Length: 143
Image (tube, rainbow, N blue to C red; front, side, top):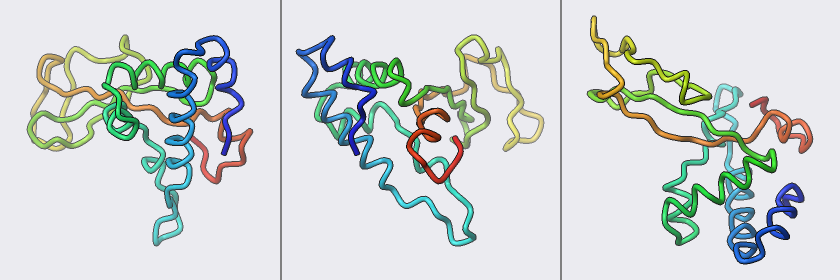
């Protein structure tokens, strides 16, 4: 699949046009992931795009991968969120769309009566396709 939304970035930043094209290939691979579960529900996490995995796939450092992902975000293809994980169980506790939403402390549903502070819990930036992109491209799931 081609991502015409990224054409502007390729023209505006010609020095990274090849890398943006490689990111398009990666995003296409993400879209090709099988998402139908045995119970016929959809796995939205199949569309998760993690900067470190993009970096490894493209052979670039994580900072540069994050820059490429931000270009795709500015084009309206993907959007970021912050996933908060328990520092003890490594289980996902909550998801937030903004840094400002990150709580100073959060009750852990995986540990009885445990509250993790912002200094303790682990936050990962994750990208996923925007609802608008999904609608425009006929994706089978609503993001």
